[in-house]
Image (cartoon, rainbow, N blue to C red):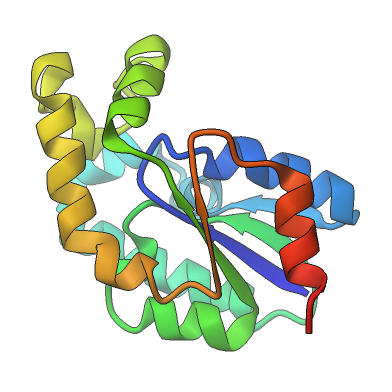
Amino acid sequence: MKVFLLGLPGSGKTTLGKKLANALELLFVDLDKEIEKKEGKLISEIFSEKKEDYFRKLESSVLKEWCSQSDDFVMATGGGAPCFFDNIEVINRSGKSIFLDVAASEIVKRMSRAGLEKRPLCAASGIDGLKDRIEFMRSNRISYYKQAAFIFPGPLIHVQDMIDALSKP
């Protein structure tokens, strides 16, 4: 089984993805890390040097490479990955998708603690403009996220609840 975690930056895709992969005894894949490996640069450098359009094409290509593999895995997608090209359709054809629906106020708390430097689409807003930026991103992306097979509202999302949902026919 291929499982894809969707949601805004800071929603917990990587944290919960690692736990879910461990519980299911599957490989954990961080799509952003795979892009960095392929490109030999950090996501922030790709955005800075080649801009978002280039990044989104690369992201879609790497996502499709993983989806075409026969191996099962749990993938933390980038926050925008489902929203460009036909990525949400590719994700849903390839496996099960889970939307981690975490409120903007909770994401702001999490990002304020962790720092913004690794999040190029949020860093420019600064802490003061972060909530507005997150809400803007949510309004633009929600129609894609809601196409997920499962939706889990946050802030406290439990891995066992995801496992239970995935095990239903």
